[in-house]
Amino acid sequence: MRAVIQHVSGQRQEMLDGLLSVFPSASVVECGGDPMETFCRAMRATEGGALFFEDDAILANGFLAKSDPLCGENIVTFFRRDVAPDGVRFLPGSKWLCNVGFWVPPGVGKAIADYAKIWPRRLQHPTGFDLLVRDWLVSQRYRFGAVYPSLVQHAVGPSLLGPRARDRRSPTWQP
Image (tube, rainbow, N blue to C red; front, side):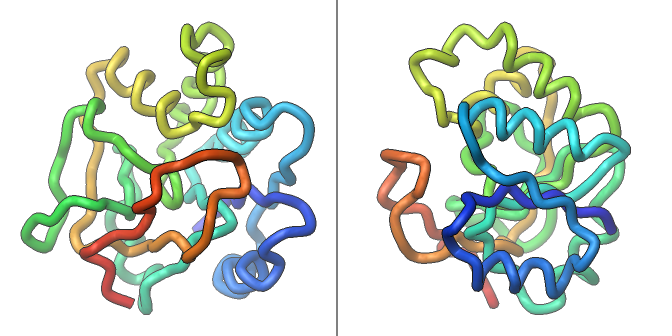
């Protein structure tokens, strides 16, 4: 399974090493310069289909076995803060909330990166990658898969990209 990891250089090296132990051939996209451009480079790196992770993602035990059957033609997020019965639910794009770990099917990463060039809220939200993805999903009337319980969790701690929601943890997380 291909993986792309967006990494803030000089930070969270232990967490990056943990992700690389599961995905030794992962493409690591280092943050530098314009954060949105970095995210777009990461999205382009998913071409052909790949898992995308932020470098503060913690994977559930057995992540690969649980996620592999879900990685097909639809975007699938492995992180949810809401609670639902176990399984996969298809939700409208307006329900997208977090980019910590998700499957990017072939063609979608490039489409999201291209959309970023014309995204009307880019100046207002220069690190709002999740808002960018949400707005793209809505513009495409795209329903995405959401896995319950969450298969990824945000590490405890503040975002390195600026102000973020305080509650960045999933209550459905089962390590």
